[in-house]
Length: 494
Ligand code: ADP
Ligand code: MG
View 1 (tube, rainbow, N blue to C red):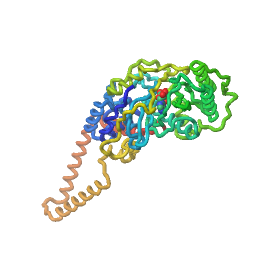
View 2 (view 1 turned 45 degrees about the vertical axis):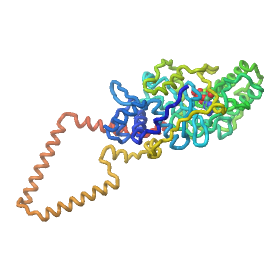
View 3 (view 1 turned 60 degrees about the vertical axis):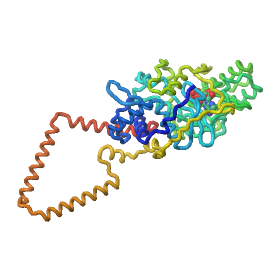
View 4 (view 1 turned 90 degrees about the horizontal axis):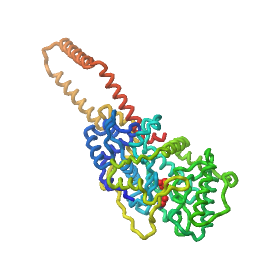
């Protein structure tokens, strides 16, 4: 398993981050974001923007692409990771990243640290079979201009955080959630092993009853885990259970709720039977053993991860799960180290297919005190403008429009200009008052009028090329719309 190379994060400049965020925003509506759009969103000069993007490209944070209709850039996995990590680090949630400790079909888990403690960082990578492959799935894209792994992974992380928080607040045995941004979730690092790695239990009956208790309690609160298998059940040294991995949770009011519930129960039963030779007569039933206590499923919806997100997420998941993997990996746009990571996804060291049919992986023991994890600091070396990535999200519409379409005037520059105008008028007034001219005023007026008509004619002449002005106006309008709709990344969820 590889490491997340975050060394560059310390050296990214204000402009780099602006351009990177602008590519991300542009990807809301474009698979490939034209440089002109990046420049407009980031409010950078076109030439400067080219240079910044080229540099970002060298570091594999963005990738240059050319299609039949567009030439531009797209964000890479690494670029997206950087944007999320940058925000988490400026929020002081994370200060360093260590080794990768887990890898699943749709996520990478890293050990991380804040100033106070070690943490687990889960980076969701839905649709990781590569963006290029997504491009072939046009039928899915039909109703959106461009939907991508960015959107999928972001929804998945958002869902996981929302559920983990709701469960943790209710006292369920889940890791403590700390924060999330984009596709990255920060949570408590468990000093535990997946049940899959455990071959002997002192008291299998106690653990079995504990697990069934969790399944029933979840259902009493309106939820079903949906992937309750040996890879998502963590056991500590005292055989205490913690449940992880929540993006696939469903409500007990889901049309297939009973099926998912029974599948979770069956999964644990089978595993205990095979691994520990333990068979119990206690098999909770969805119809008889559930007594609804609260509606966590509805509470989670209220916290921002709405029913619409849920439905869309389910549809997308369903869609991507049923696509054959063609192993057309993203390796061309990743750094050496991140392609290592990708390699790990394609050929995981200890991946198995579980009873539920999902591909899972084992982790290595993490914070058992035997190994000193290596960390790489992600704190920026130079102090940059605070939370640039967040700030750019909130750019004021008017401000940006002003800057993009007219010479930008701040209050200072306005005063400065006024000063000039006043000075110039005074000077002109003085000179016109003092100068003596022999040309009569009527003649001056006539000359001015003549000059103006000449100008008008010239202007008209310029417009005579057929349709030229219409094209320019259309392009301007399109660019303006583009910027408007691309700017608000959070509207992805709206
Ligand atoms: P996926 O959704 O890809 O299956 P999981 O959340 O199940 O991802 O995590 C994959 C592996 O990473 C797990 O099997 C577990 O071993 C490890 N892992 C996940 N979260 C933590 C954590 N908080 N602390 C320690 N290890 C973890
Ligand atoms: Mg899992």
